[in-house]
Image 1 (cartoon, helix red, strand yellow):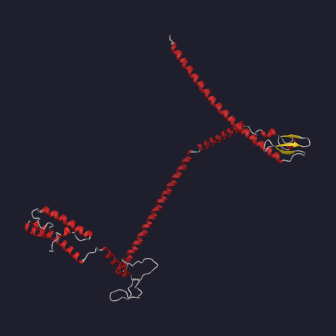
Image 2 (cartoon, one colour):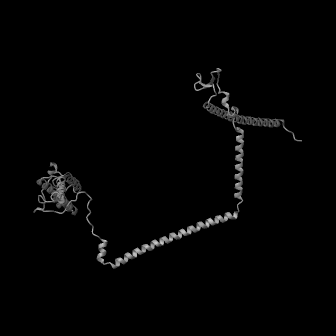
Image 3 (tube, one colour):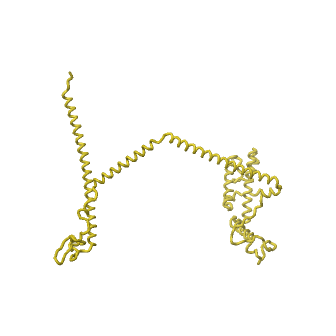
Length: 356
């Protein structure tokens, strides 16, 4: 016989109680939330109904104010409440806030006017019935579409595919015919050009291939006449001739002469001649010494260096090192003289040599 432990029974029972309490608390919270939602909805509906009643009452009061009063009654503006009126009967000395009873003839009872025509619950029920009817109608429509014969759908899809295939085939054939027509037209043009070239003489063909180029003129308002007019023996136009002011050649020569005069370095004749002789002698002497040194002839190198060295001709002992220094100093001096366009300094003139 199986023995049940009391501790296990107690623990399972306590756990069941805890779960049941949690479920009850959850149900209470859910009910409170629903109650809060219902209460808020009822409050909102009550406010809407109250505002509607006020609006209906205001419309009724406005309509009553426009109606004529019974005999003996007058409408008096209230002093305590601006915009309000009260009704008085001077003969009987009677006052009242509402219009007289005879003014309500032909109007609905105030109780019927102020009460809502339809209830909110009834409106909600009608909306639910309409939604249910629409849902059933939609389901019925889906059922009718689902019962369509499968063979009909397959035939429709096959016909659509066949139609698309035929359209693509026709489009490809049309593009192919268009391409063939364009190629035939190009070949016809080439054939006619070759026939024309073969039948035409050679001279006309060369003229057509290389037409004479005409001088283009700028489209300006003034037309200059470049033709030379009357000139004297030196070639300048005579005074008073038509081409004196419009002689473009004369203006061009003057401009070139002015540019040449301003851009060329200014040297005296003697200084320019001396600079040329000095540079020529240095270059000639250096090349002569270099050639002699390459041939191994020291005597000829010494003679050549006497004309080209800057230290007076003592380059035999230093041999090639002195020629390297000479080459460097020589090219620096030539570059300085040519770029700056000036005569050499006194220190450089001390090493001048006579022209060779």
